[in-house]
Amino acid sequence: MQNEKIKILIVDDEPDILEVIEYNLLKDDYQVVRAANGKIALEKAIAEKPNLILLDIMMPEMDGFAATLAIRALG
Image (cartoon, rainbow, N blue to C red):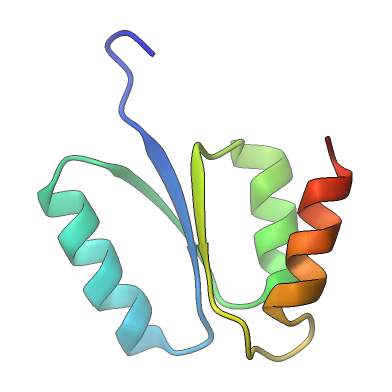
């Protein structure tokens, strides 16, 4: 990954938690993509192809377990 920032998808239904995590990751020069639930996380994982996903477990619409299974099924 020469000259590319590491892209991290952060997923949580609590906006304050997303904000704190994003702030700290940006401070350390990571590229950050946010999602508010597992369904959006799946869409962003497909579109953004992050290097790492930080995923909350208890979320509305699609919980972290279901999102993990769906993302893993992508290959």
